[in-house]
Image (cartoon, rainbow, N blue to C red):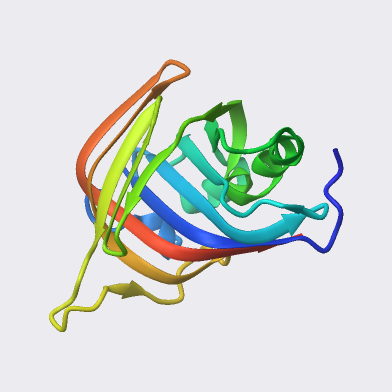
Length: 196
């Protein structure tokens, strides 16, 4: 399957990682022992090869074994990709390529596999809870003294905009011989846009 030029996707991005403070990779800095992450891309609108992908959710459970940000960009992370099972056979044909070559696959250079799974999402604009057979994550927007969300400007991931800080109450993942279980970690809630 070849991805034809002219496609674009937009949606909402939620992420939690192993960092207790805000993730240093957003500032182009490294982390001594690498990191692990739970990334969610909820596609709200967009077509690839003239196939509508709105309503599809992609989750990336990854391990970053490299201590520097530059090594992450060059060598990437490794892990599994999970896609909501509401995808039709026609959509899956595109997603099997798209998920590895772009979106979170831009950072995940070694993919253990792609699985289509039931994804449960509860979100009220301030908190979000994601659950699938191999992992779960719950987070809430961090608010400032005036009550609005705390935002991160000029961060290092160009596909994100309106980046807001979150408190991730917990997140866990167990598959492909990896077992992650974290509580009270940083998180991110943003808009994403990809074109190709």
